[in-house]
Image (cartoon, rainbow, N blue to C red; front, side, top):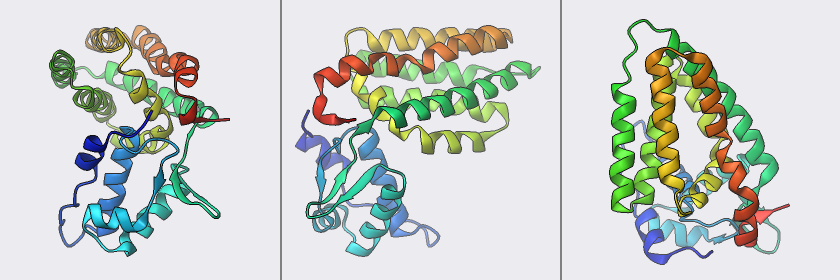
Length: 237
């Protein structure tokens, strides 16, 4: 797999000026995180501070700061005599990310199922957006609507901070999720699973909801062997 130039141009446009409280390095970091998650910056690809500064319209200082944060997260690595590159996908990290995301989200789902006045309207609206993106062939739109639905489960539980903990960790898993989307029938199956999970939440059935979510959270790793065989250059160890 190679990074598509058009996608990269869209992903790495100049970062907008934020409020006084928003640092340039934070905006650069958010842009690079999005590009890595969506595979606009492919695993193993080399990065140039000079080129990133030109594309994002900032000096090299915020670029270095953002790169340092991403190195700490294991998403970028500095290779002696070579430079900075996007870390390849490591299955051990993806499995640990699956563990964290699965257990936190199941705990949140159970909390939502206990709420007497739970409203699944926002969850169903997210699924409707997924369906529209699927019909339009918009993989990025589907991926973001998928994220939105799961984030909403955390928000409804009353523990939105748990999403922040999960989202930081699951970045290693997200790249496998994104890589799996062009597979035949994958998106339709995901949408069906989302609807079943929401039905369980609406019924207050925490036990069934947890079982459905557990299987759903493990789906991406079931694809991993075939994805690794098809894209060996994107994976490591």
